[in-house]
Image 1 (cartoon, rainbow, N blue to C red):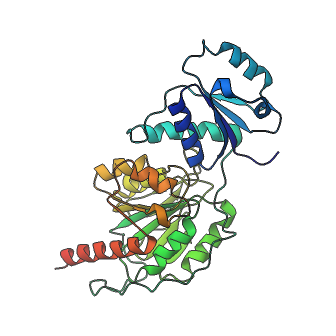
Image 2: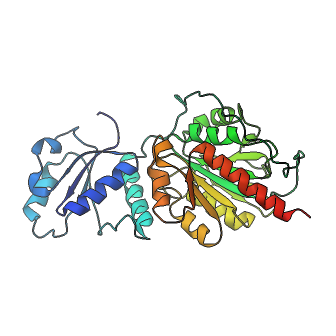
Image 3: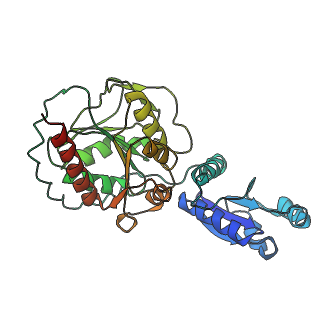
Length: 337
């Protein structure tokens, strides 16, 4: 078989077929054919042609002979949709898409995740000069005042590295990174991210703590929660939903456990992780930014969050770094006696 993720879409409504195909492609799967029932070619039903059929028929009674043929001849399994796809701008679209991808994962597994085999080595950007308002950070400084969650998927490590490398020393921010990645590359990811950065970067585990000048990378194999003092707890449970680690769940756990999430930045990636929690947190006062589509390796993830209307700023990784430094500088200046 040619590899996982080869999907065919059958819909008797052209718009519905387009929405389904776009949603499936946006998750990183390959849609090899999208067709109306009466245009389906026999070759696509043969063994090895596809890994899954996604079928949506608004009037099954009209297509009963076709369904009989499909059930009898299709070599790939059939996933029947159970409701009209909403418009991408609808508030409930992210949840509809999440249910769809969860079913896809159940049938044919997850699409490819970042492996760090080919992260481009590019010159580190010149760091932003340290504003005079930023005082030197002492090791083991107390509870973090500002926590920002970074979310990324395919293409994310290079983008996040550019962002981190541009930050000045002594930035009074604690970071949590939720990066969709093969679990075997977590330590490599930390090595890549701290190579030219002034941040302390480590995989979050029992005993880890949020701290200014520190980046905690969420583990893949189990979810994490946060205490009010910034301490990390391993739950022993898998991440909810189809993504690991889950950006949505990290956002929820930071805001709920630690007691507040100052901001979230969504970088390059496949899928729509973050599009459910980010609007909810934005309503409560969390700032949400995203990487611009033209600077992403894959833009479906930041685009999905942008389409919810909660993103207040979009920029390249370096622009996002400058925006953050200026924002924090103003916050520190206002808080100073």
